[in-house]
Length: 181
Image 1: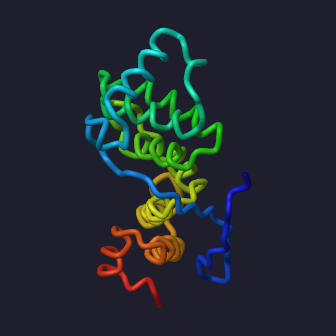
Image 2: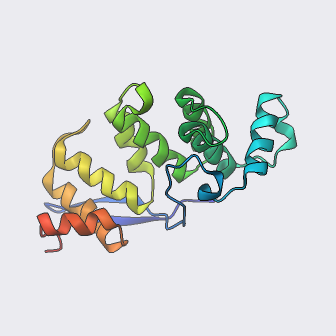
Image 3: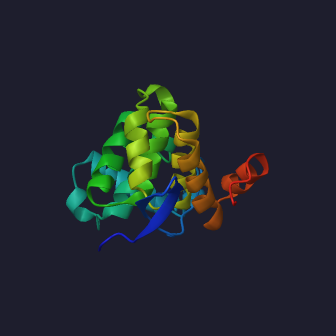
């Protein structure tokens, strides 16, 4: 499936094509499987299949790969293991998963659980991701010059896009900057 895109005006007569993805997802940092949309029995089964090298028993797709990354990142029915989480996010990204792009970008932006920060790669992942959350984060990178040249006009354009898509942090940012003009 080809990713949807739109043209974003970043000021000074420049436009760029950005991905858009309005997929619904659960934002949660809990180790409770139910809060991730799973039940404990299913998560344990998936983890046992992985542990015992029976991945072929799973109906594996990019969404499940992303979810497995989340299980290992957040410690859902398993000890947290950031390296294993990154492995599964990378697998999901190779199969086109925007949530995995965003999840891995978050790890690289923050240096989560001791994983090395890589602001340039985090920016690239957010920039390739069509989720409103990612558009907000790209705006942040441009605002602060994290891994990219600081560009306040581009920051405003991405914040504006995230705001139009209903992202809550972009609405808060609107109070700081009047980026709708």
